[in-house]
Image 1 (cartoon, rainbow, N blue to C red):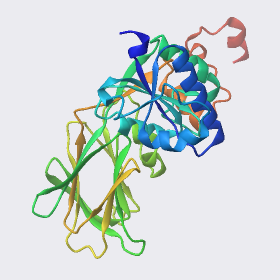
Image 2: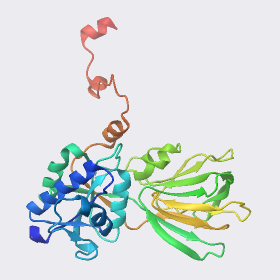
Image 3: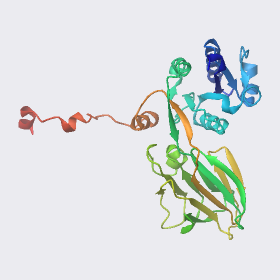
Image 4: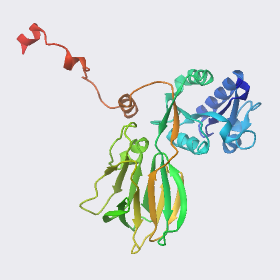
Length: 317
């Protein structure tokens, strides 16, 4: 494959001037390297009037098929990265996030390293990490499938009206676990454990741990603590028929469905993971500290625990 045959998707939005400027730089760099930059139709419509030059930029779905995309470069925060994962879902392209937002937990690098990131993409100098995704299926009271989708971060069942709580049954592998009233339930992947799950009081799960977290929201129950189950288990949330209010399903905060009384939302591991491009082998611990600005002052490192105690130190002790 020549560089001219390489199609690189660029995902950004036109809401921030610095993102528009960054998109122009990335598109120009890709063209200069002989690759073919690609924009999704909605990005082309928003960014087009704001960019200086769109010559040589292809349109996803019209000029380039999704299975022809080699990699997606994302300029934005976690929401934009989730949108990019949605765009490439039917292909195999990994997603490389360049943080233009605030936390940007899914992003690989910050905006200051953008030019080096593009250079390394052209050189194919990156690794690919696979992250577990969720398969989400909604069934009605007759067990008829109403809707199917997926999620990288989380699937949440929430109450649709503020004044009504939801009456739900939590089920694991077809067996009932507990019934309670609540504001909702979050079902999260390890990737999503630092997102809604984290805000709801759920555990932070290392990406290397394959697990599904289940976190009730404001539950009226004695046993409604966060759970962590293995990826081979199916988690179901059933809306009881006696509910006075309606529920709504949200997946990654992007796709939603109104849930009728008696609906069952079944969540299990998806057979297709999400692929993230990585430029640096940074530890997840370092990412947590950096993104959440955790206090680590006073840390002396492992050597402080393993180094032999000197005679002088023994005398002081």
